[in-house]
Structure formats: structure tokens, C-alpha cells
Image (cartoon, rainbow, N blue to C red; front, side, top):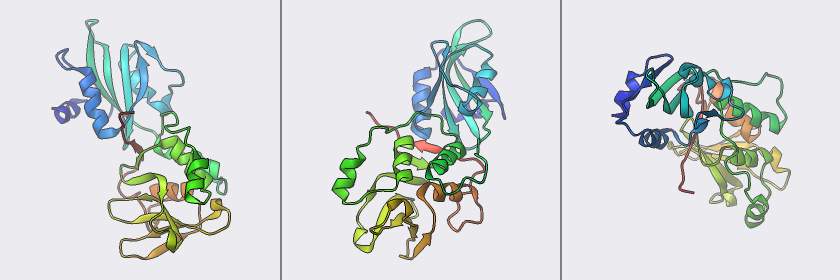
Length: 259
């Protein structure tokens, strides 16, 4: 049923007004099970503060001021919205809407600053949610692991939380230590069994090289930070571990929890 409804939305931009027999809460739950946690754009007829074109405001333009409660997901090259709105007769009905997504990418020339690479990653993915894990106790985690961790990785976890870039590259919430004896900490992974690691030493963790351990055991090093590496594999089609061949625009799929 959901796929049929999505297919009926006018493309590339459009709104589908649905029957009142359809439960809008169930509709949102079904979409969230596919695309992760949404961002609220409108609640009880009031637009949330800070909503702009970067956050899916184009969906609200399609609804022409009639939105009652609308949430949105950044998915591939589009914004997908669901919720309720007033129809032509003034009745509150469930709605689905889509509009193309323009990805905000920061200007070039900012390499070398970790904070800037995280901001660039936020722009590339069209990230619109507030920080998902702002209160991580890194001091406790680092004490337990016996090492400090790169600052940009910690900010990535705080910002994005549990989930995967392009629903493919899974961000570990704590580095895996299974290969620490080999000098590797694993910060991400994919279904193809490549391990995304740092080659660790006693020096500053912000300068640990990213090292990919392939499924056949080869270690491939890259002289860059964690956030820079993710930015590059998302957008550079000639990168040896590129994800840019699959999608022209990118997103972070947030895994939902019951918390």
C-alpha cells in the first residue's frame, strides 16, 4: 500500500492528498521504519523555528500554508514529507509530498580543519536534525579503552548518532577494539565486510591515518581525518572506496530506537 501511495505523488514536486480513512500516524511510522527519524517541520499549524530550504521548507511551499503537522526526511535526491494538511474543502486530511533536494556543500579550500570537515559532511548529507547524542561521556569511554579518540569522530557521533551514510556506511558509536592488538580501531563498517579503521599510535589521535582493512585482509591507509575521508568517498567518484557512483546526493539514515 505504501509503495502505491508514493508512486501516486506527482514528480518531481507535488502533493498527494489522501482519504481520511488513512491513519497519518501509521503512515509516518511506516516511512520512519524505512528512512529513520524524521525532522518536524510543522506542528499543530505552527512552523518549527529554523526551518529553511536546507531543512525541507520546499515541502511547505507546496502545501501553500495549509500544513497542520508535517515531518520530513532527506532521502537520496529528494525531500519526502508526510503528515496532515487542509484540503480544498478545509478538511484536515493525510498528505504525502516530495520535492527535489538541493544539497548545500561548503566552499572548497577549508581542508586541514576537522571542524570544517564535519560541517562539510553535514552539508553534503543535508542533515537537518539536532545533535542526536550530545551528551556522550567520552571521558568514560576513552578511560575504558585506554586511549583518546579523534575529535572529529566524536563530533560525528554526537551529531548523527546511530545510523549509516547513504544507508550503507554504518557509523560505530564506539570504536571496535577487536583488532587493537594489530594497531587498529574500527570506527565504521559496511555489509561488504570492509573495516573502516584508524592506524593508532601514541601520538595525537587527530592525526591517526584512516586505514581500510578490506575483506581479504589488506590494509589501505589514507592520510586524512575521519570526517574528511567520509566526505571524499561520498563525492569523489575516483576515490578507491567511493560511494559517489550510487547516488548524486547523499544522506544519513538514522536508526530509530525506543528511547
